[in-house]
Image 1 (cartoon, rainbow, N blue to C red):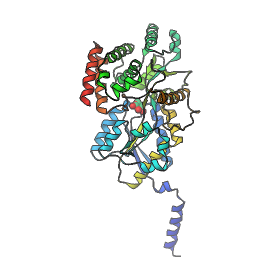
Image 2: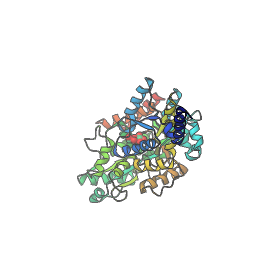
Image 3: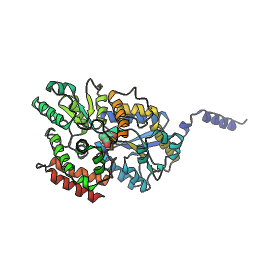
Image 4: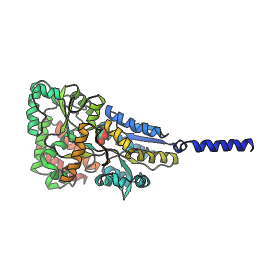
Length: 419
Ligand code: GAL
């Protein structure tokens, strides 16, 4: 054998010995807005699992709770012909992006890994465009939670409020005890998150869905909705005067430190308690938002996948999609993030009590009609309607003269205009 042939043969042998992924390593650029403590830990888990497969992770993090800033940046990048491989896009927006021709089919990954059997049909439907998977779901967040500091409640002599009436009574005592009853950040999506919890408590799941999913004008423009605004105003009156612009995780920090007693926020807040090394039931309390026990407002994070031209990067993108649905990722990620796995076949015994309660309520509410999509987090309606609701709700929060009847008229007009 000539020297040249020997070298070639040796090269062939060592190539055969290399793991397949090392040969086909690519880069995945991933847009997300997970920059708070718990969120960042969760995102890091995904990065690590991609790097273990030999791929390069290019982090495209755009800070800002709720993701509005991230979506603005994504649009600029996509329009200039340079989208990332994957972007955290949720709900009905996934279809909008697919319709514009930006997204790629994941059907080969979905078929090979039996996604149809693993993902609940309501969620699978959101991930598809014209019967093809174009996005992969990461988790299920429950939005209608109340987070509380047990020591602070105890020192004011109050129990965890189960109804809005109990919440007001507790808030009065907490205020008298010199503590901020409700930690909150004055940003439109946070205002909408609290408004949504109050709407569910006042209207119940059926009317909630009629108003915010089906946009039935008789339900939107109703005395019931005026009641929602009136109760919402009352809830918000227990927020301190410095809330304007405050980030949600800063508000969670106030509960952790005992400066505030409670926060109404989705369970990404639990990621903050977990990152601080705290234990539910001992150091903090998770309970349904007042008046919404047994009900579940769902928010599903998902990555939509953009069409790419480079083969190695496409391979990395498909590996990302596959990895996200695997039990190992679903466990590590969701423990850090505060959410529950999107797969219904997961063993929940290693999860904390809040996650176990969340999974139980997710399943029971799916059976009894108490499961509703979150409009504050893009699962119920289009981003146009969502933007209109945010405007009305935030204007209401910031107005000195809160008039529920006027706000209801404005909400009806705003939703109508966006349909
Ligand atoms: C939600 C998102 C969560 C969490 C939260 C705060 O819309 O679904 O994953 O990040 O915003 O940023």
